[in-house]
Amino acid sequence: RKEKKAAPNNRSISGGGVNSCWFLCLCCVDNYPEPMISHTTKGLIAEHLVASTILGFDGWQCSLAQQDKVDLIAWKEKRYVRVQVKSASLRPYRNRYHFNLGSGSKKKTLPTVEDYDVLCFVALDARGCYFLPTEHVRNKTKWFSPTFFDDRNIEIESWNETMKVIDERLR
Image 1 (cartoon, one colour):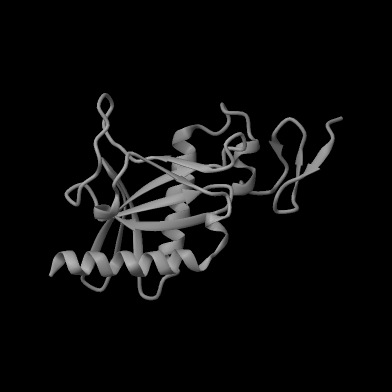
Image 2 (cartoon, helix red, strand yellow):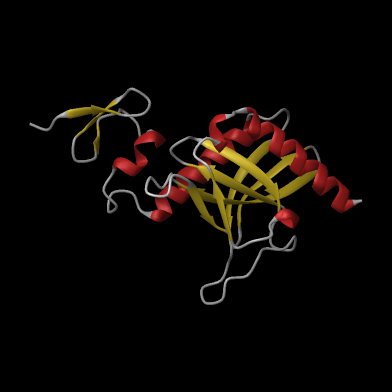
């Protein structure tokens, strides 16, 4: 028999990385062996998390787009924004989240406003989102401390700040 251990959300998971939750909870994503949840599936989990976050903002709608460089389309009335989602899990040996922001298979390039409007960083295990306007992306990688996603106000605050930057761009 495998010994049960407590997951971060106080649900139990079986030893060896098998989830005993009745649904796939994101706190357990990294407790699965790699073949069970691929990077593609983790990306889809992040996209759905971002979509549900945006749908919780007053008046905003959202749909999965899954096109090159655009994962979601969000809209409110006649205002549309293209969203790129980047996900990461806490790297315990570095004690931080690491995101790769460049695109392209050989030579990574920084995104431009022609690619998408909003970049969303998703901490899978923390179930947190942070939004950034594309024009504020300055590097091909971004690091966040483990406590960065603890403040849930960061989601709506970063979304509102990002919308202000986009509004200024469109004037």
